[in-house]
Length: 68
Image (cartoon, rainbow, N blue to C red; front, side):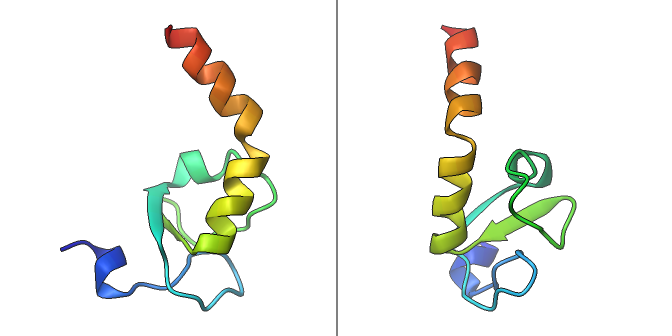
């Protein structure tokens, strides 16, 4: 059982919602809009994960294209 399943809160500064996803800190910092409190592992609620996906869509597509 991971931390998300145990009910850890979102790592974004000022957010108190429960986390739905986790990712590395470097991956989360790809979106400059999100101010996270952690360096290693970052936990995001549904709202902030959606914002992260929108902010990094082009970067993630370019990264995937590089490997194909």
